[in-house]
Length: 499
Ligand SMILES: Nc1ncnc2c1ncn2[C@@H]1O[C@H](COS(=O)(=O)NC(=O)[C@@H](N)CS)[C@@H](O)[C@H]1O
Ligand SMILES: [Zn+2]
Image (spheres, rainbow, N blue to C red):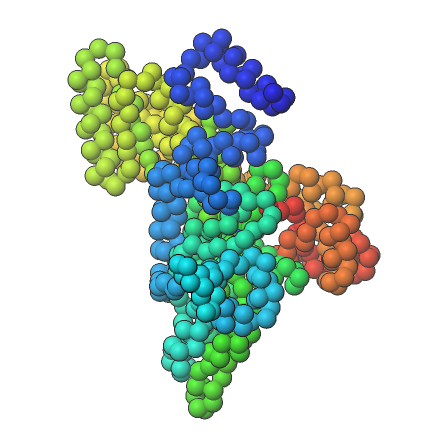
C-alpha cells in the first residue's frame, strides 16, 4: 500500500470512528484533498459522474449523462455568443489524403498526430482518409467553391464536432484527448489581412466572454512564433490557471494570412474585377473548458458549479420528523414554483439520512440546497445553503424564485472574483533567472524579453518552462533587460509550466 493510499484508508477509519457515518456507497467515494490536485481531479470525474475513463481505447472517454448535461450547457453559451454573427454548419469527418497533404506547414504540424482510415470493410481504399485533427483541410476545398466575390465576405462559419489527434504525450480526460468530442471550431474568410486580424481579436473577446460566463478568468497572449498554429501567421491563446500552478490552454485564435487561401485557391473578385486571395482566421475551444470549470471552482467536497451550467441548480431536502405529508406538500409547491421560473430543481425525498444527502449534492456541485421542515413551515420559510460559501440563511417562501435567482447572480460573481483573485495572486513579476525559476513552481511569471528567437528558446531551456506568450496589454519595458542576454527588453512576456 502506498503512503497515499494508507492516508486515505486511515481517513476512512477516522471518519467511521468519528461517527460521521455515511451510507456504505458514499464511504467508497471519498474524495482526496484538492491539494493533491491530480488525484482529486481524477477521482472527482468519477464520483461526480462527469466521465467514465474505463473505455478500452487510450485517450477516449465516455460521458456520464450528468457530465454530458454540463457539456451541453457550455455548448449553448458558446452557440449564443457565436450565433450573433456566425452561422453553424457541419463538414465531413474524413479528409482525403490529397487535400490533407496540401498545406506544407499544416502537414508538418499534424503528420505525427493524424489518424488514417485505409480500408472500407475488407477492401483497401484507393485514397486513404484522415480523421480530421481539425477541419481546415475539410472545409477549405469547399470555401474555394463558395467564395466567388467580395459580396460573399466576410464568411463566418463554425461547427461543434469531434476531432482526432494521436497525442503521444500523457493523455488525460478533458485535458489531453485522442478523441476531442467537443471541438467548437470557427473558420472565417475576409477580404483583407486587417479584417482577418480584427476577427482574431473578436474571437478572443468572444472567448473571454464565454469563460466569464463559466466564472473563469483567463489570460490572453500572443504565442511565440515557434509555438503558433501550423500554417498560421500568428496565434493568440487564452489560458486559465490550474490549481497546481500550471496553465491550461483553453482556447486559441489563429490568423492564417492568405497561406491556406493560396493552397486551396480561395479567391474573390474585387471591385476592379481582379481575382484576389482571401485572408482567413480560425479559432477553437475543446472540452478543456470543462477541465478548467471543474478545476477552478471545485473544492474538497467536490464540484462547485456556476448556476448557469449546473444540471441541478437547486436541490430540495425535506426535513421530516412528524406530519411528513405537510412537509412534502410544501416541498412540492416550492419545486413547482421554481420549475415555473425555469430553474432546474430536484427534490431528494429518498430515505438517505440528511448528512448523506448533503454529501451527495455537494459533490455534484449543486449551487443551492433548500432544507424545508416543520419549523421552517411555521416561519413560512426555507433554510437556504449556498454551495460556494457554505452560508446558510432562512429565506421567505414568498417570492422564493426571485430570491433564488438573485442568489445565483451573487454565486456567479463570487466564484468569478475568487478565481480572479487566485489568478492575480499567482502572477509573479520577476526580472532575474533565479527568481523566475523558483516562482514558476507556484504559478505564472511575468518577465521581459529581448524579442530574439534564439535567446527566447535558450531561456526556455535554461528555465525549463515555455514562454507562454506576449500579453496584449504591455507594461512599459523602458530600462528593463532580458533576463538571459541582458539586452534591452522589447516585450513583457508570461512564462509558465503548462499542460
Ligand atoms: N488533444 C487535445 N485534447 C483536448 N483539447 C485539445 C487538444 N488539442 C488541442 N486542444 C484544444 O483545442 C484548442 C484548438 O486547437 S488548436 O490546435 O490550437 N487550433 C486549431 O485546431 C484551429 N483549427 C482552430 S480550431 C486548443 O487551444 C486546445 O485548447
Ligand atoms: Zn535576450
